Length: 351
Image (cartoon, rainbow, N blue to C red):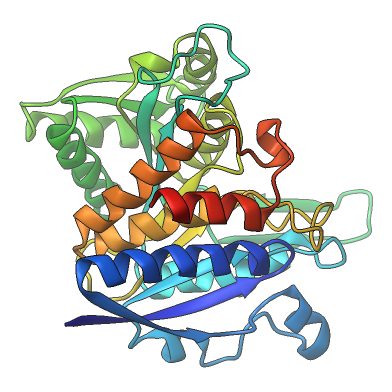
């Protein structure tokens, strides 16, 4: 029997509430499809930062290195600045393990109402491929003259040929397996160096993938088209900042950010990849047992797909779709009154 050792990082807020449902689903499909899973849990979080002054220990990545994958709940507390939590945990893992692809599938499920009148289930289904380790989220820069009238901050964006090319190749190859259509997000009319460079590399990689039809859109127009006509998209590739913003917007178009999953991938599999819902720690509802577990469960399905269990992953997404299409069980973010446990139990019944 194939066996996988999974690192669990519940994190903060509802993170600890949505990972157990994901584990239940994983164990259920594992038993059905003949593979086993074991888990090691880590208390790395903002709570740990408050106690010990660090989100994770100095050898945190070394502790994760031998795991097959990482499943993360959520990170963030109001009393810990967001840049502290992000740069103390997620970014070191993403960069230390070369998780340069952030994959965010978007799907409007039957039975979920989009805030857009013309968005239709079965038509809105695309994926955002976000460059995940460089771009606008660079460490290069600094602060000068703190506290004085001429105080300043400088933040440098870093776009490398190697970094951009590898994420573009991933996106073009994904588009070739899907609908054969790719859209690149840019802003080369206003950002004079990095985005024209991005555009040049998109054209270069597009020529190397002639089976994919591609175009490019300025980020402001692209955001508008996500709202006006989300069904037109199949694969959207974007830099770190643009991809981050677009994927959250797209999740809202699909009905709730509580549904949205994400995969931080090292495609070469030299290091473990990390999977996480994108809804955040949601401290306003933490501890009430009402968090939507779909984002975590769908992230677990992405993890299984990455580990080679595509049929098991499809069973999970089919079960999610069935709960939403065939029952009235909904968590509050989807207009229902089900608790996290009630939703999970219904999904397990149908699974």
